[in-house]
Length: 158
Image 1: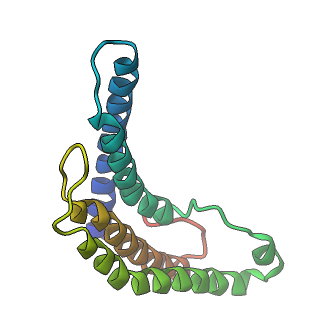
Image 2: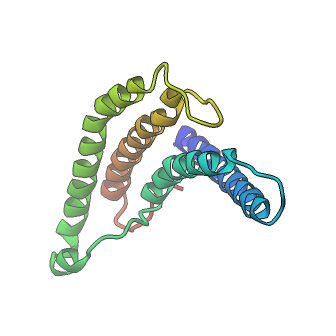
């Protein structure tokens, strides 16, 4: 669990850095509208920063169990069975994410030898965000299964 906490702290740090960079780039873009200088790279960079910010922050939401979900069915289920239903939901999410890892890698490979229009970043690295998000979502889903079955309380890995 120490390794999971280290990974979570790294993801939190990266999320903060990426969102700060995103805000700075968007402010540069807004400033460029009112000055004679044109920053054509800001739109593309802001899109890439946003993609990666989501890729590293979505697993944190999975860790803390903060995804939007409908609890109507879980409210009707008895408490003894609720943790098994919850675990099954995480199993489905984790299995689906694990299934998509291969296809996300194939998608990332499509970006090889292609570069973005203005900042010339190889699209492989941008498309790799899909692999990162599915890998981390699968990992945190399976960790949540362990946590739910081990603890009767509804807390993520902390």
